[in-house]
Each structure stands twice: as structure tokens, then as C-alpha cells.
Length: 142
Image 1 (tube, helix red, strand yellow):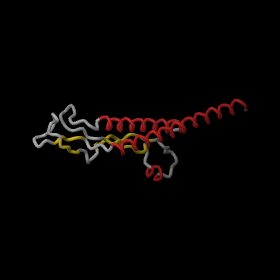
Image 2 (cartoon, rainbow, N blue to C red):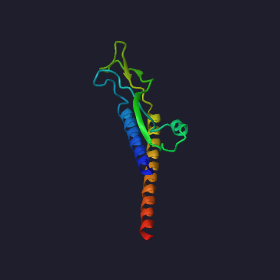
Image 3 (spheres, one colour):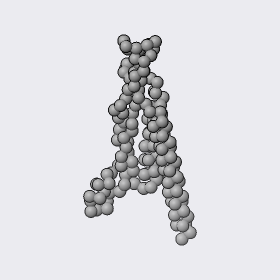
């Protein structure tokens, strides 16, 4: 896997992270989902394509970095907050409405961090393409 493919895999992961965080923010006041339950905020699980341990464990140098991959999406454990709103149509018998426990500040921080990582990988991709173009120019001159 070359530098362009590694940066591309990171761009895909950061884009997916932004989508999951935006979905959490969009559902911050959702009291019921289509199946009738409470929306559960999600987190994206990511990791390297090949573990660092596997790369160090072999004496051969045949294993190359595989970039980053999405391992899955899982719900956040602490996922509900209750508010006393007896007039709400989704209030229970005691007058409480259950909302997803989405931390607005944490989601915004995560989105900013993901967008910065996206920008950094975009810059790395651009530099790799420039280096390949320069190498072609050098090859043409010789």
C-alpha cells in the first residue's frame, strides 16, 4: 500500500466519523426511533489494517502498512437522559420523556478533530501526488 492509498483510507474513515457524529447531533432531541425505542448515540470504531504487533512480530519485511479501517459502529453505553415534561406526547406514566444522552460539546469537539484529521490527510495525499509528479519529471529528464 502506498502513501496515496493510506491517505485515502484515512479520508474514508474520517468522513465516516463525521457522518456518525452528525447523525448523533441530528438526533439529539429524538424521543422515539422508527422501532419505538430511544435513539442511542453511536461511536465509530477504527483501527489499523495490519496491527503494529503483527508488523513487528515477523522477521520478514513483506508486511506493508494497510492504512486505517472501520472496525464497526457501536452504541455509547450511557445513552439516555430523562426530562420531566408531562405534556409531551411521548411522556411515560410519571410524566418523564427519555432523550438520548448526546453530549453536544463532545460531539462538536469530535467533529472538529475529525475535520482536522481529514485536512491533514488531504495535505499528505497532495504531497504524495506532488512527489510522484516530480519523480516522473526527473525520469523524463534523464
